[in-house]
Image (cartoon, rainbow, N blue to C red; front, side):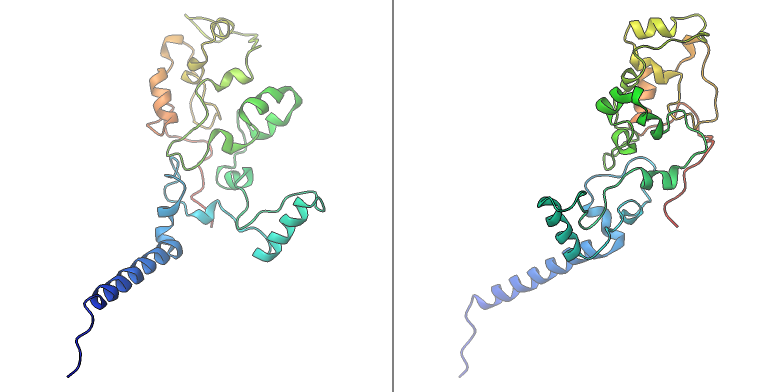
Length: 230
């Protein structure tokens, strides 16, 4: 007579099956492009929901072995610049690939001028990702008061505001949350800034917009963003 299998064998077989299924599921999450958002660092920022990881995260040059060798040479002081491993850091070139504009009220290259040293120190304003840090699920990550980094000494020759405090008075009052009520930071919306102070957008409307909500500036853009890499 054949002996019956030990009672623990079916449990072991079930454990192997479950383990194998979990391993296949993990591989699917890692390898299938449709599931790449599952292991992203966080939710896509507003407008980036349809982008794939490869639209911004570019593979670093060289093989993994060459990348590690280059990093070792850098750590030993035999190489001036560090080497990227896996993927290069996301920077201005990846952003301007989709957001290239012929005109911009605050182009990033302007912040490289010596007079904007404070803005570079406070905000890193010369880098797109300093104000638009990805995987936060919002539109803008910079604080609503960021204008103060450059405009503490603001001197407007021909005051445009009617029936309200002047720009100099607003600066003296440190009323930095009012700036975006009239001014579209990048100037990419087809609109004119308000002349009447009471016509400015509310601070809550601007705050909601920065967090990814509806735009108080309208939706007609001078230079619409491209839809990912082609």
